Length: 113
Length: 118
Image (cartoon, rainbow over all chains, first blue to last red; front, side, top):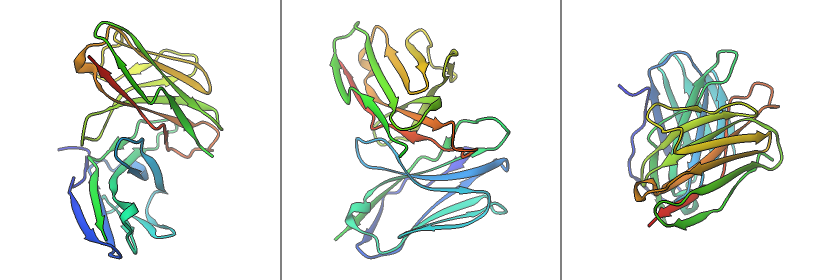
């Protein structure tokens, strides 16, 4: 079993739809959770950063972390064609030092006009 | 803020030559930098972690003599692919951790370097 599971998609939605992207994980030590957006042939761009459980909102994006279920989500409201990209979840534990990020496989999203 | 640059963005070289890729943190000091490799439609594969002034830590299966990493300053890390072969062709991406972020455990990525070995 992989430490982080993420459905690779592709996920195709019409413009204006609400998009839900999800990851599950197995390591209960994970404390820091991130969502990155990667356009084709570009480096990943940090979208959302969350520590421990709870919700975080930034514009059209909302990140949720449910540590009891080991499940994280990214919601995109009023999706736009420019949101078409691959979305990667990433997480890391806190141990007082620095640990490498564990990435999901990435979900390819296509928003069509 | 938190901008990471990479140079070159694209490189084509002959088999057997060496290629150096630079990664710079432009507006913060990066105590730790990471090098990833990404194959088409696949996720990121961590190759190595480098801390300023010390030897890099390589992931299992990554040849340290083939992929030389130097992190000489808090804003610059280099990856040298030695004696490149066609199977080394890939998208190489660096990232940097902001050591002054007060415990924020995240990484900022560069735009990537596409390497093609003929």
